[in-house]
Image (cartoon, rainbow, N blue to C red; front, side, top):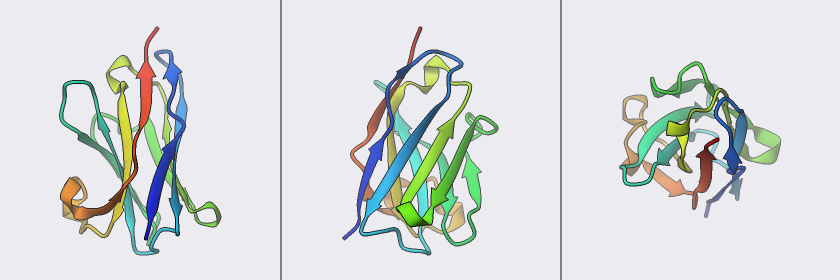
Length: 125
């Protein structure tokens, strides 16, 4: 059984950088994709980006492309989300999710087997 734990969320100022971590107890399947989603207050959860363990490729939502970077560390069973130039609209609970979605379905929450509990990121001056 895989359990995901996100850490790293905190209060930061606009323009700051922050790195979130998603650790998998029991390890990630090496054919898994790990995606990040976020849910802002009063809004639906939305897709942020995906990291593939198979070929280490990444994909991102247009709203974060060029500012967010997902990566993985095999030895630590951890996927990271590096977030730069943070804006107030990035304030949300960030979740990681793991599964084997086909690429075209990576944005669909139902495609993921495992979810973390979320970590709060607040961007405010």
